[in-house]
Image 1: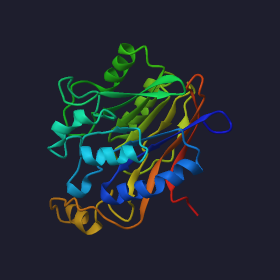
Image 2: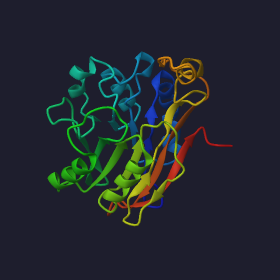
Image 3: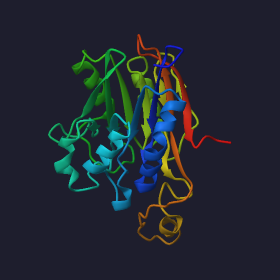
Image 4: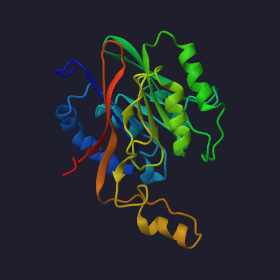
Length: 269
């Protein structure tokens, strides 16, 4: 716990491929010390993008060993076919809670935090996501809160496409959870804030990966799909690798957010 008795949580945006993973592994110790972090979370659904998309158990364990205590996923949860059989071996990883209850994997993760019980979960948006979910993310979020009154507070990752849907989720959960962090677009939004109920909110955390790219992919691989109506090629870029996320300060007693700020690494000059 840092000196002013608040706690600091860093939630990192979508990790994209080997470049994003490598920067996290090399820089996370310095980042943790410099920002006096008490908890680090990340979205890892594109961490295996050098293999196509998704994540593997080996990559999840590597990120967890580096200090990311819970990893959320999204529409590319099953991007690596073997992960269907691996996900139950990584209890610190949660797939979207509004997937069917019969889907493999945990729908949320519990972490001990400040002598309390903190839940971490993710939900998949419905607007423009092109993947079927079992229920509305709004209903699923409320049901998760109702079903687990023993959990002192929650941090939710809302993996959605449209800003309106993500903003609506923030207000839907305002005052009921510690934080609602948007992911999926890979472009960091400029609206990190604490809502009036004490919930930290950000429309999109951005990505941890190569920023001289088109959302993490080589420009020359993706541009033809827009110019010539060709299928996109998902080749991970490698230049200008940066980390994006949100730095949250919270009261360790009531687990209400006190501040939320956009996080960038390397630090802007």
